Image (cartoon, rainbow, N blue to C red; front, side):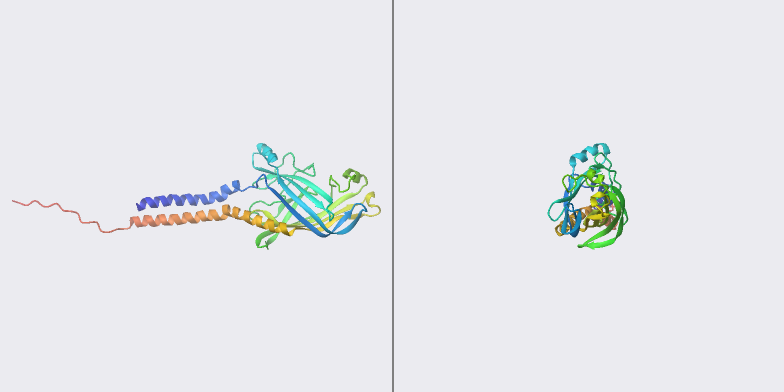
Length: 330
């Protein structure tokens, strides 16, 4: 009976030991993915910012500029692309909406971001765009890959429509969560005017005729939780200028927007809580269960060997054999 039990335990030990690396290296890369229908929004603020007054064409100090960013998963578009791409694809329709202290629009920048649901690598397909202009992204945007590494990544900048390195600057603790800090600097670059201008009757084409151009620079900062690859906090030191042309009169340039953009406190708390819950799910597949199964396999193997050893141990002495009576001579 002990031998039969030890064989059963040995079979379970082999099963759980083999399941451990399969769960981590085979199942996790296939099961961990961004849901196609995900929706999220975020509010950022730049307090004591500088903003251009288009009525007077002069820059003025304002108490606050608000940026609302939304990401909406387009399930229909992702399913259509998946049929030809042959892999799981996510399509995010995003919008960055900037408004002044009076609630009026300053600018809005729509994007369609198409990427691999597992690796977050860009997928190039019809519809990939920024402000309606087709683009071909390199690198990541909005989110880092699962199991983020301590290295530099290519990060896409929507204003310039180009990618540039975003540098790993070290490991930090943010609100009790261990994070990787990344920073990217985009130098002064001439960029397009948004297709929807803040003043009715003014179009990018009409501004172009004046010879005035738009320039932009930013320092982009992210605090990224490495297990999920999700930023828990972000800041941006953002500057825009209008330069040259008859629109500015005798001035060489004027500030269109300048401010230190930070996430609003209530969205920081919400994001940290969300990332921590998702982190537990990822760790379950990459750490807790694989190591747990490995420990369970080792324990079952030890128990199996112990039962086998006991089964082979000498027991009580066997009873003496019964001797046949010798025949009695007559």
